[in-house]
Length: 509
Image (cartoon, rainbow, N blue to C red; front, side, top):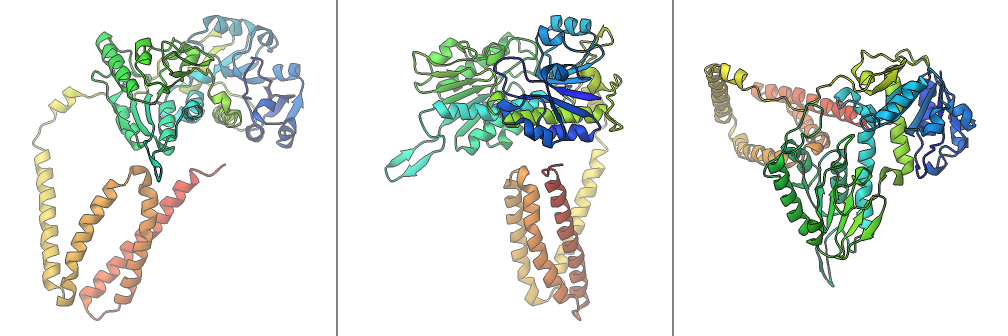
């Protein structure tokens, strides 16, 4: 089958649906790829790079007449009319908000797959266009704020005086919010974040920010998004947002609801209370904005000196990388839908991912799809917990205490029967265990694997010492040396194995 990649018809769209790299991957799946002349020009992908990747560079009519047409956004009427009957359109279609478009595509007789409707399940993460674009947009939001902010982000102490760091407040700890947190934190700012889900606190703190909880948080729904807040929760949230904004230099809002206008988080009064020189980046400007004073598509400064950035396509300001990520999402989807890698697309509606993104097919509108439960954490089952008797836990605690007692007796015997020259080292060992425990537990989880790799050096020292002592005439020393050799070897080889597996995750295909 032939995949067509036309030039994006909407004015201002800088991205292209397939890059030379992802075009090569589609060709490896057995597809023929044709790209319209100049389709990747705004993303710095000239036609020659597509030719080198094995794609054909063609005119617009040939690209729109392909078996499978891949675009960024829903094409306008003129281009929809060019689509062949029985062809497949893969694009961001916003089916929740565009029922008329769904009808038009169905009337054209195409199979429409909405990339922005990928279910929020683990198996579909590699195809999630919303997350890919939100990740880049979150990074770019901080860069946009820094470009108009009148000070450094990081604090400094110089001979001329002390400069405090910038205070950044981020509302929403989804993909975009976490990307913004990581970027602002890496630039040296003091970062605080709020999310309507208390479960997001751990994620926020793991990125180096402080979590500011809403007094009456909302709960996460089964579709992966937060539930709509009631009047009491909304009032508490707006009060918190206003208080935090007044003390922050930069406020970044990220709250969006698919298919609906963005919720209002920052009121006009809250903006008036902010310090002159403050910056608001409204990442929901394309759907109306989280700030009451946002002007979608504009950057302006209020009478009170607050700059409000209302860019509607932040990911489009990094077109090369955004196009690559979007194109890779397409590749991952087509890998799923091309099980034989023979260039033949299989629309399997029994697959929950395919069913979730299929808007229409064979003259039938299939939107909305059946609900898919994607809750990250299971709901508490009070009845099941209360039905479990408390007595079985007691023997478990008793067994644990017994083993601790046996371990203490063995440790005491080891100290008692050890040579006098060795006994003094047990104090050092005990102190090392205590210090090691507090050092390791203080290290952030993301550094545990590299830290484990560093401990291979320590295990190497143990291994060398054990080899030197394994030939001792003292059976106790010889036996302990042999055990140390085995354990240290497991730690060394296991550490390198795990590290190698971790590094493989960051290597290109």
